[in-house]
Length: 458
Ligand SMILES: Nc1ncnc2c1ncn2[C@@H]1O[C@H](COP(=O)(O)OP(=O)(O)O)[C@@H](O)[C@H]1O
Ligand SMILES: [Mg+2]
Image (cartoon, rainbow, N blue to C red):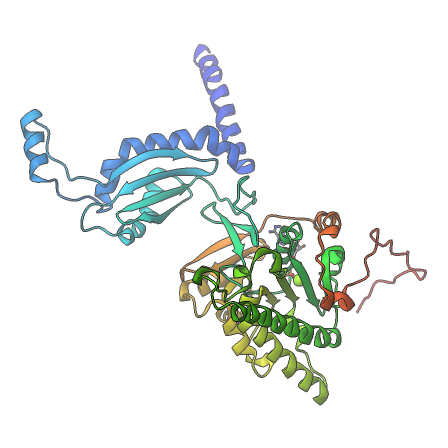
């Protein structure tokens, strides 16, 4: 009987503790990491560092001096030397540690062992980045940060930089228009493309930037942001009128840059400009970001005449993509597919869109359209995205690398609210004035239908 009491006394609290930990781990992984996961992984890392490095083949033979020193002072066996490690730096999502590579090692050697390291130290994933020649940083991520995305508090935003999603290594994924002027975002329906756009629009809404939308799904995606948009086209006819105006605006800006370069032959070299950012501040035109949601709708043709119009629009978009960067005009194109079937010039336009983000797609061909020229593994990663995780995507890097990213959830209401609050920031651009959408002061109340809808049955 007393055995049973002891068992209950000791086992009960232990089971409760275990159950509590398991619950926290499943429901609040961030809390679990900082209270339980972090101390355990730290202890494992510190305790097993040498032997794990040796097992991964990341050690080198000790120097002769070291052999002598060890033999002279102790009678321990002389072990191979692991890379020298820096301080452990815990973060809210994982751990960071810097390693100094031994002569003859390269970062790829460490990266090749990342999977082994993650198992040895019991963390969700290990990423390796090069800090400077000879030094790599191991970024240990404690749990799956993409399951419930929370952006880090000090995500580095800035002018024309929007931290739009979280990467799987818990770093923010920043859409930086100055370094990657144009981007293509692909994905099947309900894969999270519009959510991605929503984040970009709200991120840019508070900055001195003109936002222009083309949303040929009758404006259902972009209309809620009307208050902050400088122009909105909701069908191909309007888009066909808007695009030449943008091209004209771009040409005017080129003239401005040229004039600036032309007038003063004695201008110092560093002031000679080849884009608007080199102009004196008061002359710099406002940057324009053009959002195109559902590009296929824009290029849809029914008649011969439509076809001419489509070809013209493709040409105009290509011009904007080729020359827009210097004029501060940036493209953000979204679609389900983007291949030759969109018409003459479509693949050429695609080639101009440097940044690539690919959400869940229905077939490999679509993933290839976005990521084919980046890496074959990226295409496979995009094909493996599960429908249960909308917003998950594979983003191509400037460095030719790629990573999985996911946007945090942002409700349409909150996004629209941000745009309404920023309505006073709509910049003065006379050329776009005719395209400025009517701004509803309040969200429109849609009256209840008079006829009771009948469910469709077949
Ligand atoms: N990052 C995300 N987290 C949670 N839900 C998301 C996320 N991104 C999208 N969703 C949800 O998925 C659905 C489809 O998203 P949407 O952006 O409209 O897709 P698409 O434009 O590709 O058709 C929406 O109901 C949206 O709320
Ligand atoms: Mg959409």
